Length: 141
Image 1 (cartoon, helix red, strand yellow):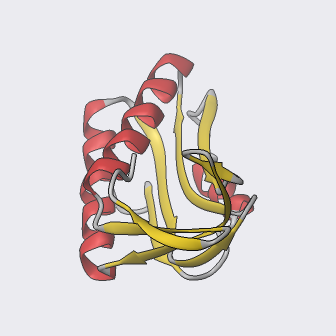
Image 2: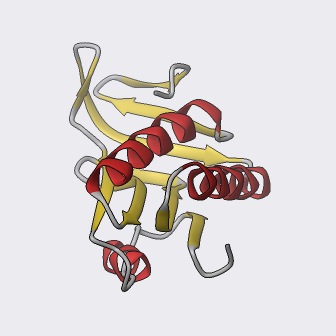
């Protein structure tokens, strides 16, 4: 699976051009890329930013395990799983799940499963900064 899987947990902005370059494959009929961004509201409060912390080694291991599971379950060409750490402002990308496949149905299913599983299982924690305070978000999905 080497070369078919791109995984990163990084404080740097996520490079969507690099994600698309990684997903490109001669056998791919398409790519599905989900990019999670910071929105300006949550639970009736005005959000100013999110801050992510991760147990980096474990998070990379978990994303690698997830990527290998996606490649094993669906007939995918390539997979990309990336997550930001640190402060991410409103509008900024904080997570990317991308897959390429010969057919769209597999790509959509795998990408949906990928983001849902990543948010439920990766050791990455989110703190919400909002007008008047901040709070750790316990429900990561």
